[in-house]
Image (cartoon, rainbow, N blue to C red):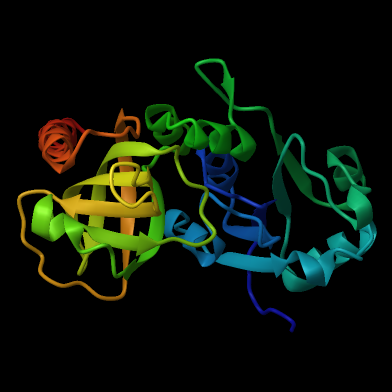
Length: 270
């Protein structure tokens, strides 16, 4: 499909997470070309456009992976007839088997090429792979700083044990696909329900005190939301504690009440 547009500058990349280094590229362009490999686990699919306030175009990797570096540049020029400027990161590679690098891009494209140098935060090199490692370690404070937004996942509400509402506190149980998950434990979170962000406390991990099954569940603080169907979004604000086994439901409930108090405090400070 031939595109009709007057776009003169584009930023190109996979942009998983739309972190602060990505934002530096995007801020210098009129539009964004996202190379979709179906491997994004921080910000998946079209969700990336939630953090981009510019026209975004998806190039599915399966459709371009056999193009030579020269053919890829020709495609860009065909899709963006007015193209004058391309913005990429210092480690950008393109073309069949990544034959092209920034030097070849400058040689093949007869316009301006802006190469954004490595971006660091507190001496941390900002890459999607680095952020994934911090997510799996539960280091949400660093993750959110590198992203410049709260880490967010989406999940479908499913039926849980039924134990929380009866014996502990009511929770929404979620089935989550594709996203990389923080390490097991309890987190201060914010839950998007019916277009409203609500303070919440969330648990991820195996229910070692009860049935041992893996669960992702969230309790909405100070609000009875009733029965919820469909999908919700969950933003992680801070890590509270690790997952551990309690001697019984009374001890677990006492800890949950303490978790809620701390989450309520963390939420007001966020």
